[in-house]
Length: 395
Picture (cartoon, helix red, strand yellow):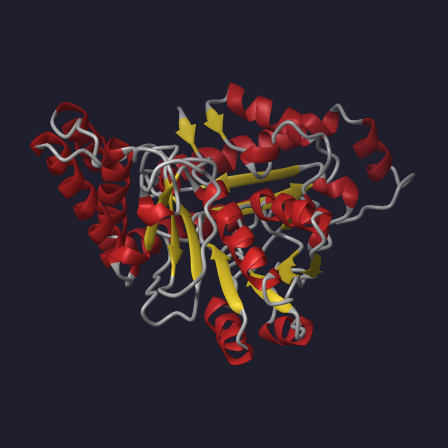
């Protein structure tokens, strides 16, 4: 059996997305900035995609800016707020310790440019509270950025409440919603968010394309110099086939969101209940406020890389955390931030499901994962020491 359980890393493009992309490649191949009829047909298709995406998110088409993906959108959001704040003497930014590296690395660069950054700690379930955000806001704070849902442990943050605090304090609020869009209901007409990032390949769209939503009046800084595309805020000819595929995938995801979320959550809960029977296993993330498809466990006495390789040999595609840090030998910064012991964090496993997964696949996972964990522990001198009492168990 072949099982794809790494949907938090990327998803299989939907048939609707592929059809939309092929249609653009074959018919709307013109440059949307060209004045001739082929270019204007492409411009109309681009506008339709922008309107479709705006309709799914509950905002206006003029608040949608196309990017190459979530990382670019995150970079543009942070730098826009930072540079706008600096012009009025506000050079303080607030975020959390569990953000994606697109946020954390950008904040590090801004610190090197003279900005100050506060990274808020989170609870053992990965939650940041509105009270903590409010306490951290200073007179010189120009931006708060808190991810909508964590890409590793699946915890969904109280975005509406945090946004309300920021509105009250007059501080811009950005959320990295890459893992949430298409999976969690989002209505920007009601949500107090100034900027939001999303990426198409997380909801069965193509890779290499995303969106930065910027509420009307929010100052933006262009990262790419060139032409006047995206109202002067993102130079470069728009990738219309990818944008059309993204719009088609998002329309489909939002139309089926409630049904898919309920189905996937059922698979998730069965998987969590089964994996918790493995001795010295630890579920990471919030049990209640959690993405429907996210399952993240740490297994003591197991090396995460070996776990993934043996699961792959059984036909199971999984990960140990963010695909963007898969080459690192260090344990996840997210797991360490929520208090998972260093040793246990090395044995992490993230299984992320979609509506394409089946109950039969979950039962296969519940058979395969304990077998692999048991095999690895039988070969581990660390596990032997733990079992014989020469070292204390940490989970």
